[in-house]
Length: 398
Picture (cartoon, rainbow, N blue to C red):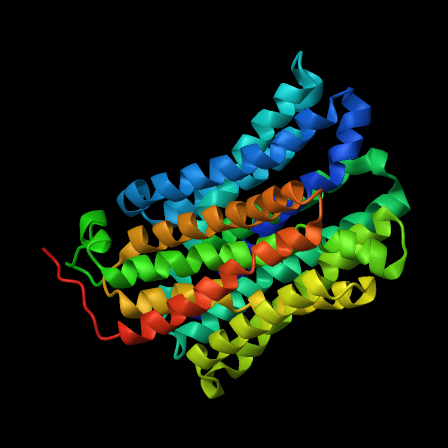
């Protein structure tokens, strides 16, 4: 088989599945960790924060070392850390005096891998000689959604068949995915994001561009619009379907991820027929409508449906903003993608934080929190309009 950019794209698709594994597998084990190692739940939930903070640090640091060591070496490090973290998760809690310390070390290692993958995969796809960059980018990001669904559903099925006490075997199975894809990455071609002989823009040059700041705002809002609701869809499922928390945790996030992936898949397949700006504008309006239904309509079933529709509406926002930024800011290179990833991850934190804060101020009224978070899709729509006005602006290189 002839190795070309199509295999590179396939390796990147699998890379996003790996990111879904490292982000979504361990939270399924929180209760097991609490019972097996007698760890307080408050300490267990800190693992989510650790994962998030490490990935933010990697977003920031990667801009300065990826170009020095190269994309292939960085990709191998990312896959190695992802696999090592999952493998060590089965060893260190038993080996170290503190089981919690063992879990934390494992999370830090696989979070480094996840953070690197977030920064690496989009520019690798962008550099591939494809006919439609926006289609390829949207299809790439859909694989995170399918990976998320696969991790939750397959892990749940494994636990139902073999028992939750055999989670270590499943962790090793999931660790095999980055091992094999890392080997795949040693063979596929990786194309330069910036033409040979040229240097990418510096942070100072990017910061001097109004377009850059508009794109950063859009990325913050894309992340926030997605996570503000996705953090609560399991609660909507519990109320709307009248099911247990376990079933709610499956039904809510799975429906959200399925429709988010569908949105990205539609553009990935039909992007040549769809105006990306119109699709993004429609998605922002649909997102605002979904937020309003969740906040105002006092019907659990409607809230559940609106949560799923919200998944569809936010699906295109993150990958499309990546593509728009790359097309608008020529020569941005790795630094541009790292800054966009940083902004998106900050948004993923800001959205749920704002929703939770406002909910608390209104007597733990979740609807009030979601209503407050409507500011994010509204600002993204404003950013989209501003980006079209500034589409002719160019950044001067020193």
